[in-house]
Length: 530
Image (cartoon, rainbow, N blue to C red; front, side):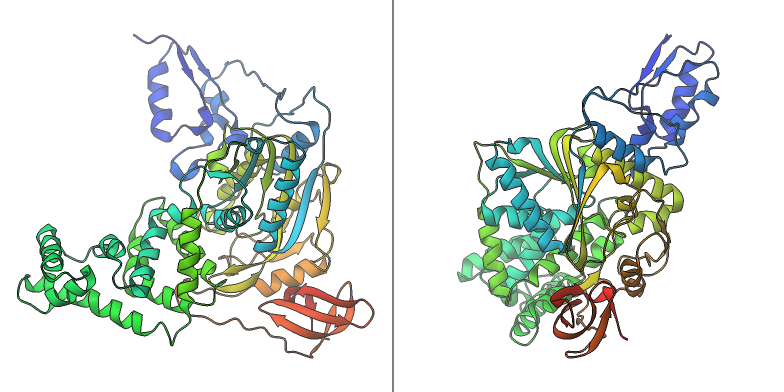
């Protein structure tokens, strides 16, 4: 008979575990639960924060002991995390303190785009390492798995040792599948690529059909794709299998014929769509499916940086062959969810933008409850650091192949001003009003699935950008073009720099010759027509 029960990580229990615990405790009520409601971040997999919030009412008379002394982080880090989490209404509340000194203030950095952010973070890490900091004590924590790609490519380019908790971007199953399609289109004799995708998604080709295909290839001394073409034109297979194989071969030939006449990113979207591969993941109801679709979109984004499909595939070969162990430690790259329970001397927190963090999908699906869990995730991210935290956001990112303007996360605005040092790229919207409750809509249409429109708090530059982000999105797998409402030579107004003429346009990034401030690069969302 069980007479005493102890539960750890009580904030992560689900409904079934809660009900089972109530039955086990019975009338003896010898129960000890340990947990932190501010670190309940697994609602998406069934955890119910309400279990810990109602502990006192469920077990009246229980002694509540608040463990508020923190032995990990400096004063500024604790104050910053506490300042954000204080905006949650559903919490028990506590006042963290430490015997350590205040330490360094958090740095909040604003960059032009995601590539600038990855370059700057990499440069900062290299400088820290040159000053003697152990790379294994540095972590880059992102909200979603697709965000690792730009950092991985930059780390590889400069030879910075790193490890990814979970699979590296180009080692993820869905990325390998997509690349296999592209490899087979570029090189029809690539048997490894053929074998990976011939039945992905399922095409009704059973073991007997695959064996017959291999026998045909060996007998004719041909690559598998050529053998498949021959086999689909014979009577060796059942009609259903023969038709499925023939359709696959025809698709590969049609896509291959489009290589010279279609932009390679548009071709990739069409291949992933028409092959049924994206449809397979859209129909998948597992928690991982959305992340896999985001990764496929990020793969297409990566292709934008290359002039041709062949150039991209050559780059992938170098990236996938570039893995090597390091004797000097490795930077850790992981999601915020995977970082819970870990600690590092230095933590970089990139991508703090509305729609990415907090996740617009989480807010759309769960409303205020989802937003509070996202805020708890921010709290967890900041408190992974012992000594140093750098948060960052970008003024624009490539979303579904198009440059889209971004605004800083509401969590950035919620940071207490006395805990941060701000370093925003010139012309990128001006100062952020720290220490205020950001008033941002929680639903609506935008490039991330929500308007992100501010009703107060941010300055006029950020407000204009938020307004311009309103509008629908495509599904990420249809061809699109990048248009701007501005034209070369057009006269525009900037809140800080005044009037000027547009001299260069790159997506939503403009170069403007201002009458008094000279030539500046600004994001289109921050200028207006006079």
